[in-house]
Length: 240
Image 1 (cartoon, helix red, strand yellow):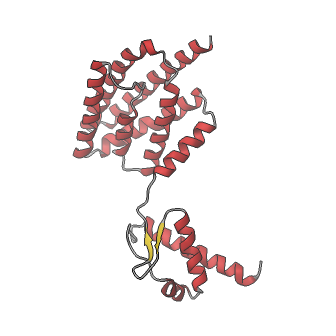
Image 2: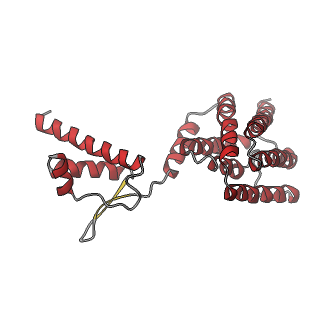
Image 3: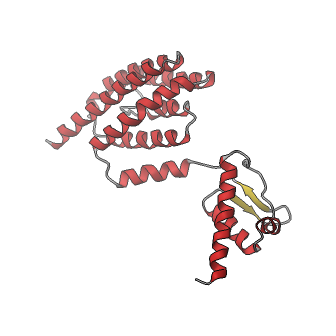
C-alpha cells in the first residue's frame, strides 16, 4: 500500500473514532451538524478525501446522515437499535440455540435485569408495566389473544426500566427465542399456563413497584425456571 494511502486511512479512522467518542460522551446529539469537510480537514491537517471517507463510513453504519444541497451536510443520526435486535435474534436463531443454552442464558441474564429494573423504575415505568399486566390478566381471564408462555411485552417492559441498552437488546433477543420455543407447548395446556404466567408477572410487578431488587431477582429466577421446565416437558413429549 502506498504511504499516502496508508496515512489517509489512519487519519480517516481517527476522525471516525473522535466522532464516535463525542457521541458516546453526549457532546454530539442527534441532529447535530458536523463541520464541513473543509473545516474538518483543516482541524486534522489532512485532505478533504480523508474526511469524506470518514463521514461515508459513519453513514454506512447509521451514525450519520448525509444531506445534499445548500442546506446539506453531515448530521448525527437518531440511533436506532432495532436493526441490532433483529440481527442478534437472527444470529441466535440460525445458530439453532438449544433449550439448555436458552435456559442458561435466561437464568444468567433475566434475574439481574429484574433486580436492576426494581432499583431504577420510575413512576412512568411502573404505570407502563401495570398497563401491560392488566391487559395480560384480562386476556388470560377471557382466554383470548395469542398465547406465549412468557409474554414478551411484559419482559420487554421490565428491561426498559433498566435504561441499559445492552441489557434491553439481550432481553429482546431472548424474548424472541423464547416465543419461538414456546410453540412446542400443547394447545390444550395453554390456558392454564396463561394464568400461571400472570401470577408470576403480578409478583414481579409488586417487587418492581416497591423497588425490592432482591425479591424481583428471586421471582424472575423462579419464573424463568418454571417456563423453561414447561417447554422442556413439551419438547420431550413431542419427541416420543
